[in-house]
Length: 63
Image 1 (cartoon, rainbow, N blue to C red):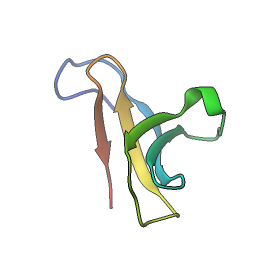
Image 2: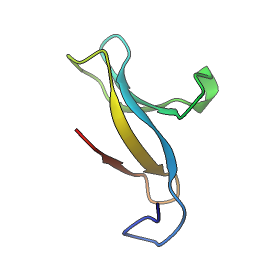
Image 3: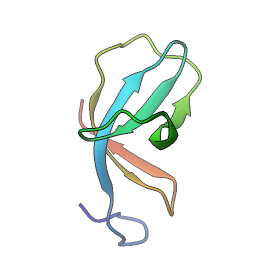
Image 4: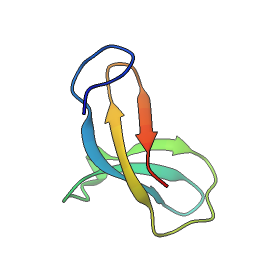
C-alpha cells in the first residue's frame, strides 16, 4: 500500500496492545527493535491489521 501523504511504500503489520501501550509490529515478526509505540494506553490485546509509513509517521488500520 502507498502512503496517502508522501506516496511512499507502507509496511504491513498489526496494531497490538502491549501492557499500557498500542504498538505496531511488522507482519510475520515480533522483534522488539521493530516495534513502534503508537499510544500509551490500550484495552484491546488482539490487535488489528495496519500499515505504517516510517517517513511520515502515519499509521492506517482496519478495524
